Image (tube, rainbow, N blue to C red; front, side):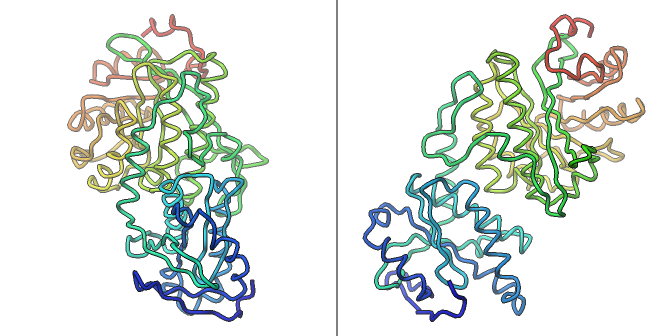
Amino acid sequence: MHDDAPLTPVQDPATGVTRIVSADARQALEALKASPLLAEGKVCLVGFEAVRARMGVRWPIRREMVYEHFQRTLQRQLGPHGYYLRVSDTDYLVSQPGVGRLAGQAYCLNCLREVLHYFLGEALLSDTIVHEITAIEEGRIAARPLDVNAVDEAEAQSAARAPPPAPTGRTSPPAGSMRMISQDRWTPFVANDGRKLRASCALEPVFQLKTQRRIGYRMVRRVLTLPSETALSPAEVRRLSSIDIEKIDFATLARGLDRISQDDGGERQPTLILPVSFVTLSSHRGRAILADFFRAAQGSVNQGLICEVCDIEGVPPGALLAATSLIRPFCLFVVGRLSEAPTTSLKGLKDAGLQGLSIDCPASFESEADFVAFAKTVTKTIMLYRLANVRQAAMAGLLGATHASLATAQSKVHYVDERDAAAL
């Protein structure tokens, strides 16, 4: 398609929406105009007017970057029969015959939101413009705008109603879903800053201090630079882009579920603690993909899942409550994980919808005591990870901690014997 091709303004008489269609796209549109996909609502028009308006004079220089980013986003999950076509300076036609109307429209919305977040830093409702194409006549497109809130709500309800997978941990995605949980899809990857990164996941036993029993495993992630295999520090991981952090979250979950299904022979665990970054949980697209992981993980547990929301420092309690409420139907509990021991009160998290708090054990036991004291003002469930030894675990229990994991050689592997739990 040539950028200087003649453009034809088109107005939908039902909605008054004007669309500019490239003359070079007309031949491709002819193949769609008699397709039943139009009547089924499976052809959408995704618009970037907000990006063009916000970029202003920079748009002619940067629009190819926008096009390429959107196309890469679509190609991740579009499926073998999916089809897209740029029909104007700011519009893409997207056809998805292999999925339902609702799933296809939700996917288009999520792809647009990713572009808006990437280039504008936010995805305002007023900028999220997707239309359902109703007719194609002689190169002209008639379309009606989607009710974004209605589509999001219907998609969330559909995800909540979906049955859990079989208890093997290797369940295929639900019918009509374009998403996959294969770890190869997410890692390794090239980060926004050009580095090649790989995410790995280990399973670490977590014990209830009062009963001295293992409640299950938590997934522990590491992010490595390639080819040196040098691990990034938590601070370095937090400085990555939101898209990079999403990939790390998804790779961690995929690898963890794969480890459970392969090495435990499909045996169910009491529970699993699944780490999810706040930036992923607050993204519409991120939550949609997380829903598939959580449904798959439900088949690996007897009691339920624990969602551990990471990187919550500085997040307003209202925003945290709004994000966690949408994933709560999949979880037994939602806990918040702090990156470091707090130096001030945590009372601001009291209304954030968290049912527990967790942290990696600080270097000094005094800091650990401060964390427990602060955390007790917010919640009764307090989890301390990678304690140095059994004695420290006993002291943590006396302070008021409820759960712990040990930073011993035995606890670093997922196959710790139940007899090790008796030591607590």
